Image (cartoon, rainbow, N blue to C red):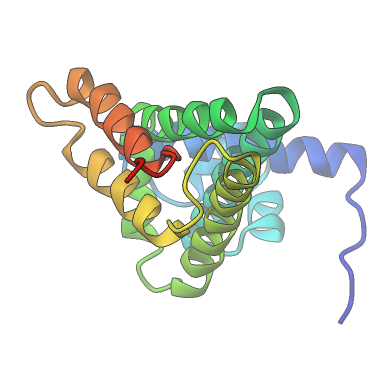
Length: 192
């Protein structure tokens, strides 16, 4: 396996400019834009665009990977700064809020990456690992149950996110997260 050579500072700036512009365009759901126009709008040459991202799908994949990396970094930051149960609760709320704030981006990326299931699977695995680490820390701390895996929590998050844009969805989302979190809390056995 070969490792990628680090980018020069100017190449890194160009790549970051392309990613930032792509994120903005994808968020708006602009499918009519020609691929070459990403270069012009990001202030770089067409050759630079193709050198970094040979296709629109490759650009979408890179944006998706950045989004996943941001969410995973947020989970690590929360684990490092908050008690385990608070870190988990903050991440669950932040995850749903992030998906809602970037729902246009999420829809566009899902459309553009329909044939790149490997990248989607990798992203899902990375998020599952981040959530699993939060769950494990809180279970080890004794504040949540140790018999609930990542799958049900991910399913709950996706369900909440899917219903977020219905009338009253944003107002209800926090209550549903509280409900999910209450179900995760460790309860001492009742005396017989």
